[in-house]
Amino acid sequence: MEPIQIITTLIFVVTIIFVIIRKIDTVVAALLGVIAMVAVGSMTEVQAFQFVDWNVMMILISVWLIAGYFGKTGIPEFLADRTLHLSRGNIPLFVTLIGGLAGFVSMFIDNVVVVLMLAPIIFHIRKLYGFAATGPILFIGLCSNFMGTALLLGDLPPQMLHSVSGVEFAGFIWHSGRPSSFFILTVTYLIVCTLFYFKFLKSPLSACVLDEEAAHAAVGQQVEHLKDKKFAFLVVGGFLLTIIGMSLRQYLGVKLGFIAFAGAIILVLAIEILKKPLNFDVPDLEEMLSDIEWNAIGFYAALFALVGGLEHTHILDIVAGWLVPFIQKGLLVGTSVLFWVTAPFVGVVEHDAFILTLLYVIRDLGDTQGINVWPYYWGLVWSGTLGSNLTIAGAPALFVALSMGEKEDGVKFSLKEFFGYTVPYVIASLVICYVLMVLVWVLPYMK
Image (cartoon, rainbow, N blue to C red):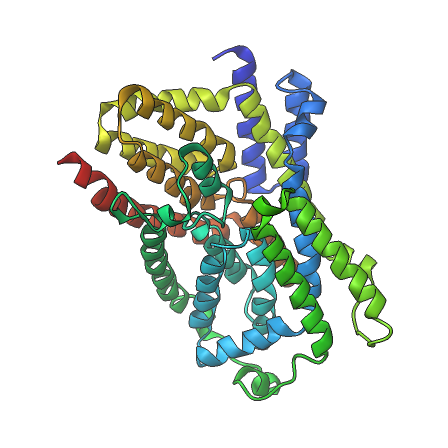
């Protein structure tokens, strides 16, 4: 490695350590890392700005604003009571059901958006039962970051796989005569959620007692949460039209960020015009904007710049090059090393750039050496997604969840408590997925 690559790696490692331990503000730590990379020449200040995916930033801000209005409709409270009634007041089961829902919704919607949609449901029941919200919200973040690779729509890695390999939507369900991403991840996900249900049964969540004054709301009696159905209809309609527009991006020919921004602006305009005539009880736009977690937006932007510095100095190419000899040794060795090296690496490095780099490496090896690329493709995107749940540096959705939970509780979540959720979740998901990958996608091709 060249001196600039060693220095860049050290800056990145130190920055991530401070981000994880949170001894100083997370956003400040990340931005200091960006400044240090610019100062030593890993990238210029212009490049640092360009490395930020402003399309993603616009999606986050726009959908966060829409989700803020969604939280004012009363629909999250209604869904919370219905789910609690379904779980018969069993809080561990309630949290597991909401988390389970998050994963399946994230197959179609960005994981951060899923956290924003479902967090108010946890907040509502938390007020009734008095439990700390951060752990359950973090579980939602973990779940929302799990199933995004199950289908083509949910997350960037499957879209990158489509771009590199040409695989279409159906290929994520069934490929090469065997079950692929959807079935492998769904089985893994259901097992992990079940394991966490038993974990919740042994946690303080199982001892939660309902506040007597709020009992009528929690046991499913008729409570009018939707106090203004016209406002709720307008917000849900705007939300759905925005999501539909984003799903049709390839036909509209514009960026997702523009679609999200247009949806948010049109919804805000409609609310402001109709607020007085229809007597909507909704906060001013200034207050809604202040509810956006701007620190999460800043952290996301800094993370893009940090990974951009690694990519610009070709450090990701070096890591990918280290893996090539193992891939060439054989299918079982290659897929195993790729799987178990990728997982911890993306736990501290935002995974999109790393996955894209290795997808091209695997494709080129397939063209030049005739290896069967699909076990490697699947192993990479699965471990790259599941491993990213280890820290907030790997999965920004966890940072959003952590920020929202701590804001609701008014108490900082310790590093031990954080890893108490992420480490068992990541280990369980990786082990189960690896076993299924070997059984379905490796051993059959070794005969």
